[in-house]
Image 1 (tube, rainbow, N blue to C red):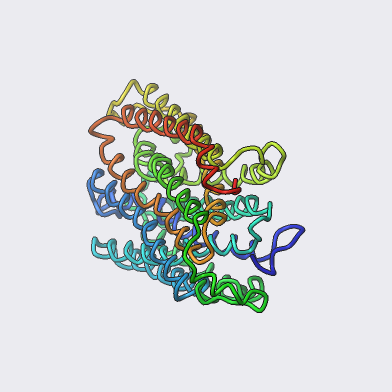
Image 2: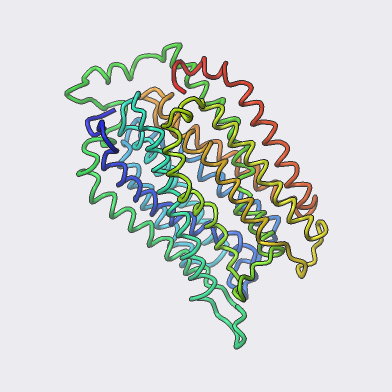
Length: 458
């Protein structure tokens, strides 16, 4: 709620946050797109020669903890730093982490670089999402549309990153033999350019924040007071009301469901990526598509379809769908997406380890497409509703709680991916599909009691 919210269109601050988040996601997803390959390729190939099972666990714990630290970073911003200072601290820390991965190509360098990325993301992630919510009044109908636009920024960066970073790592900086076969991958240069992307985002944010955000996010929520609302400091010290407590409870309920969505969705960077590398026919008109490029398929679909969702949520029909229904549909669609991976496994004749038997690219692309539609029903809607339900003094902390779902989910997802080889891809993909569809149906069935606890927020 602030003076920059307008009655027509969106405030310019939204687009500054859009591009800041775009460059941060470019950095993160560029690194993430090559991480599992960097871990598992041999030392001669430019990797760290880690076993696939162990690499899946490392990947899962890393991608999990980048969503745990926002709980701490959100609390520190609310109490001491303010959102803007926290975003700067986080951005610089992540940039250094990427440069460590570039400069120290050992297990020690890996763990140090990942540690810095985990810490930096904790400061950055919850606070930039919170700033988006603070650009709008609580009852502004443009808020859901704003988060869909913001989500496009996330996914524009996520789309560009694997293409650019993958091009550097698997082509331009790769060492090839006379026949054009890659001998050594240039993964470290991928990390270098991911760090440069983070640098660009920080320069953009720190040079334009004062102009387009005004005083928003400069001071901690606890200490924030304006000439128009001097009493808000006193309000921040008051105990939560019954209504506020129930709304906070809803955040925890939604978070519990969403854990299992992300556990399935995040297979894209681990088990799906490894399956693609081995068993999907990536040849198109004589060109073999780099495995890391497939990490761009989901964000490409996001960028393409997010504007339609932004329009739909503000339409007469879209307004009739409550948050639990939207999110339940998202979980069901995730499960349906995995049915296409079952088609890929079936085309290969089952869980054969013969890498000469390839499945059609169609199955993988359709999986990503359906997953994307499910994500658009769940993730931006969830970000929006958390900002609506959270008491102002707990805004960033509650965003951290929301992101905590991805912490648990990625660790679960890492364990799931680690057992693909042992249990078989068909069993893993079928189990994920059935479970998330079941949970989606439960969420839709519980929509009325959940809406009652939301006290007017939909």
